[in-house]
Image (cartoon, rainbow, N blue to C red; front, side, top):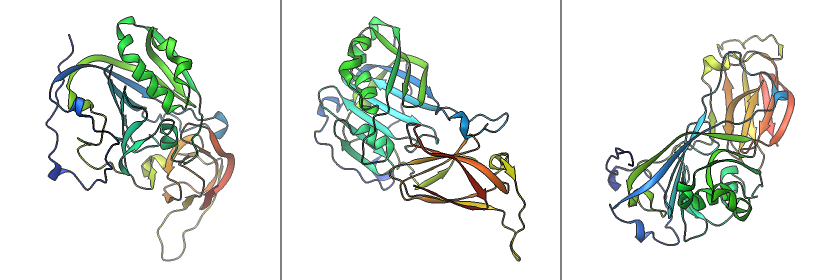
Length: 314
């Protein structure tokens, strides 16, 4: 019996923040109702693998895993990225339908349609679609077979992979584990639920209840945690006269697409293309730095950077 799920009323349009939404190519009239439909909810815990050569990380500290929530019926799919450490903004959504190619997405830029093979480029934040690679570990579950074609099509498009290459494996089970690029995801929950159809519609209507925050750069650690990152080589530093500011690292992302900044093995910040940020709280000294692309492929490093100092990602 599907579990009951509490679903608050959708916010009125007047209660929403300013949110640029482009109409979908086709309205999803088939799912424009309060009729309940049985969906499967899957939750995955996702981590980004950081290469060992970029540093040891902070002793005793582990970043909170990100979550991926997938609600799917045989006809519709909605994916929500939950957590501040995703390359895309927290709360971003992907909507898909079985009878149409591509997807509709909501993120910090609003809502818009994506064509086939554009989901990987959307995640990367680059006009050039990457091919990060896809790995699956299936669990036998023939009762879920009707839900898997759309589920696996989402994974294939996210990874810019061939759906036909994984289709037969998806017909016999559900993913217990999957990996896209260097980001493994492990299933932590699965439950059948009942949802009103409109909660799964795959167009621009009924958007998220508020604008999704999307600053051009995001520092992922508070100052106290940044202070715990030990430099490879400690340094000395004296503040300028008439100033009580600590040493800073100024970072600019001049590369194509999003960049993930790694200091001494710890994920520190995410920068959109062209973004800049100032890191405060680091100890003076020399740090191992690495820069990863959203799927975990290495963009830069390991290299050494001094604090105080500047870093331009190219």
